[in-house]
Length: 169
Figure 1 (tube, helix red, strand yellow):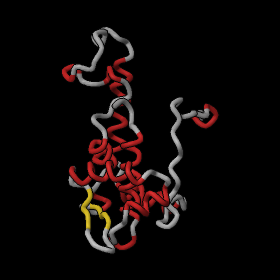
Figure 2 (figure 1 turned 135 degrees about the vertical axis):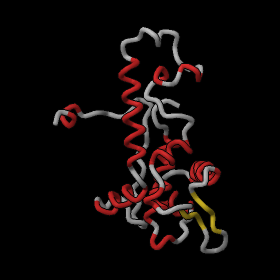
Figure 3 (figure 1 turned 120 degrees about the vertical axis):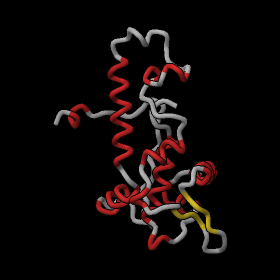
């Protein structure tokens, strides 16, 4: 997958919701689905992958659900993205040539340097951001206090709009 798909994005939504759960109490996927607008079936697929990768644990019973396998300050956004995505790459030519996805012009393409730098910066930023950071931001911006999780915006096939006025700071 090039870039970060909805699977990776929603993985971070799930993990941040668990990080924000009060006193580490289990949180049900039904509640996350209800409060974010993400389909329960899709959440179940993603949390299964997160569990396989040792990032969440399931608690059975009437008050069961999911909890983080470690403290929120010990789990990075990079761990979540790598658990839910095959790889992180802004464009296929930034992948390692031995992975067989690279185009045959990589040795003389003038843009490969840019894509490699972008991939590095993305990995560094994701690796420096913990679930505790995301939870703190969610609480401070009132974008996520369990009971008021933010609805996940629908993603169009056209990609995100970038407001050029906002990028010129």
